Length: 124
Length: 124
Length: 124
Length: 124
Image 1 (cartoon, each protein chain N blue to C red):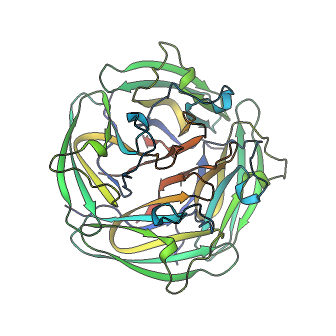
Image 2 (image 1 turned 180 degrees about the vertical axis):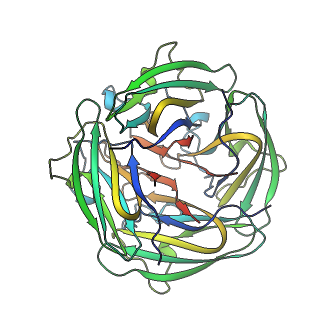
Image 3 (image 1 turned 90 degrees about the horizontal axis):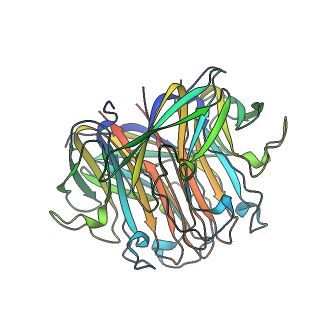
């Protein structure tokens, strides 16, 4: 399949609640960037995290193999440093091949689960 | 009405929970691709499913008749094989005529229903 | 302010649950098309509703005054005929001036409210 | 990092419920515009609020510093005047440098939290 997508993406919303009503990994509050690489070459993605009141942090580096999807939890990022909880942030993704990025949050601060999702902003 | 839309679409997010709190079909946890074909010719759509750790599966073939909408549940796809539950996936839609694709998930793992929806990524 | 937006929009997802857990109008299950007209001329909008298994219905006609927003409930449309409940549908909006359309559903089939929203698909 | 984004954005949906089931600021019902400025110059943003049945109000002025994100609660805007509760509105953002805008609502009218999010409509 021909590559589809863009090389730069951004998610302006970001917030990982420190609270969860569940201990099951699937239901712990989390923010996810769903990344799809349909092409024949691996995608090397550099992620930069922006904050309200301090300098950006990054790059966080992830590889999305050719013809694979990676549903990346921001909760799991820890190099160069973990993303702080209960803190507003935003993110930019820069890839060397076209990818597609979709944003999802599962919020289980309360006993019931709430979800949001939106396509990220694409450019170039 | 003139055809509107694009011929290639992608949904980077995909996850069908195996659990549901309801037996009513409308409230069982499901992922849906809402496909709209406003044109005068039937749309022949080939769907490919991408995973994190194995080769893509497909094509799944569906037809969206002229001037009709099809709200396709990924749960119902079974040829060439069902989509595994509790597994991250992503999808690409390739149509021979312009269509519009919107993604929705209804999640009823917990007693209350949670919903998400977003327009898919379009190209060409 | 200069007009912004597009003249043709489409929402591929549509479903009005017949059930609600509330009698308060704000909390009754509903589908909304939020339409914004920032320009100096009134927008005359023709809406066509598409179904899975029968011919499209419409046009439904609404006017969005200059420099106004209209949060239109599909539940309220009744000319040429009401939109059936518990039925999959999709919609196309055709305006004579540029507008912006965003889709929202509030679902209160269960005791708690669930929300979804996404920007509609724009063209021309 | 090079600036990315657009200079004009619009969110057609807007509604701040007056009710909340929580007193914790994080869980009070709110509408947020998540604004990201990845460039080297501060973004001066003028926001205009549109209503169903009266003239637009604004501009509300906010600055998003270079290389920062601002998760702006519409609830907090009060100059030239607060945004009325339980009232449909829409918004337009005009910036002097490219930015990215994403819309989120947290709704806690009922005991459980519901979320929605979508990318705003971009132009220019």
